[in-house]
Amino acid sequence: MAMKRSDYLSEVWREGIFNNKVVFCTGGNGTICSAQVRAMVHLGANACIVGRNVEKTESMARSLMTAREGSKVLGIGSVDVRNPESLNQAVESCVKELGGIDFCIAGAAGNFLSPLSHLSANAFKSVIDIDVLGSYNTAKAVLPHLVKSASTSTSGGRLIFVSATIHYTGAPLQTHVAVAKAGVDALSANVAIEYGPRGLTSNVIAPGPIAATEGMERLSRGEDAQASRKRIPAVGDGQGGGRCHGLVV
Ligand code: HXC
Image: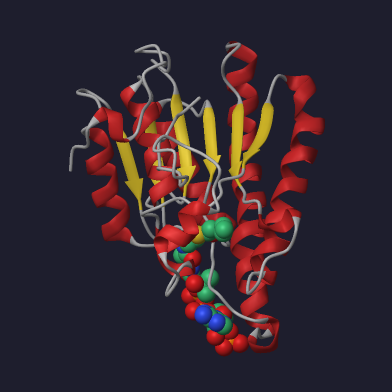
């Protein structure tokens, strides 16, 4: 489904800034990553999104293509970031179909609310595996292509991990996620140190709560939305509470 540009992109971006670039994105079905990819596609990029659910991933790819006439967006389902083989195959398909990878958004994540007392070792491991091992597998699969992009263009070779802020302080019912996101931050910093000299950048974005996302849907059950908004010192309406823009400054 087509979306209004103002729903995912602020006005400051130059049209065509990502012409001839390719973005590879894990977690591309999700609200945050799909908004990022939609914005990049609008601004000229072609894209490949991967996810576990085939129907959702293919349907989101079709929706993302409406952001710019003539764009190409591949949606590859049955890809679990915990499985390096399926990721490597998706990366190879992306490179074959779209010509390379200039940017990567590693956004696949797992989350649920649970007190430590109810968290099994496997539950903890599931989120660590999706967030930390999955981000690592993604980085390993795309890094050779990002190095190639950085060697031919000053604006290529960009890796972004989707982190959070809860591990800065700890958060109730989120031990597994806080530990995982700390790992993602460490991974990003180490990629930056090792690959910076080869022209790559590696960064995290650390979103707080964003209205109307799957994450908030899962995590804010039962909480009064207005009370939640009042705790956020930001954006637009003077009452706090972010909106999910793909690219904002
Ligand atoms: C306690 C739970 C649980 C719950 C699952 N488990 N849900 N334990 N409370 N609510 C346990 C299971 O019992 C099992 O342990 C283990 O976790 C693995 O569960 P599976 O269902 O087999 O795992 P899997 O199918 O791989 O699913 C992974 C998942 C699931 C993380 C559990 O929630 C998921 O796929 N989520 C992906 C989508 C998602 O969460 N997106 C939102 C991301 S938002 P046992 O011991 O029984 O075997 C986000 C925002 C972060 O990340 C920022 C926050 C501010």
